[in-house]
Image (cartoon, rainbow, N blue to C red; front, side, top):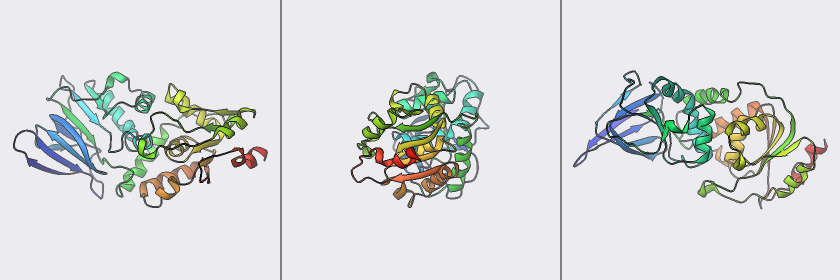
Length: 309
């Protein structure tokens, strides 16, 4: 990261941390006495702190009374898919810090249900998560690089972390007991800019009458582990285009993934390199097919040929 600091009229200092185009160095940067932070763009933090500098790496950290905060949220942290692949992807490394330092906690820029479920999947309890800096005398760890999927850099680092992240969900072999699993688009807590209606009612009615088929709503799931298990237990997975496809297909392995819609991910992967890398990772593990519908209404005809074969 390249630090840029400037003195304001009064306290505090403003520190800009920007990811390098060629990633080198530690996975973390440490800033002391942080008051607040926000994002400048897809790959930069703007930090307000009483101390004017930062440290590369966490070697100087000590257990004690000084609170340690770990900042992982990026610019689109309130969008499920972004948070999963930009913030949660850091959890294997962050968990090691939480385990080593009892006075450390994750700093979250807003509470969302999916954040808490995934944190709990990694064994991180709610009491290790805060939404504000309660003390000015603190240590704040920022992940490096802090890049969004939209950012056009840090591809090698993203590939490396994607493989490590994927391994966290495939540590045990799951029997394929479900022939067809439909995951309807959820209606609560969606990212407003990408929210849309997707009608899969006819498919749902159809599959409920077929043996060894299920309909699973992530809105009703109380634990992320339940979602991981049912996805990995399915031979054929039907999910809507967008984050539902990216996350659930990422969890799947040796499955057929039927994507209901082709307006988002196929277009985004052409201009966002990280999304292309993610899609290729998914396609390496499962077969993927996109279904087109200009009206976002999907009927049993979409899957009839697979069900009857």
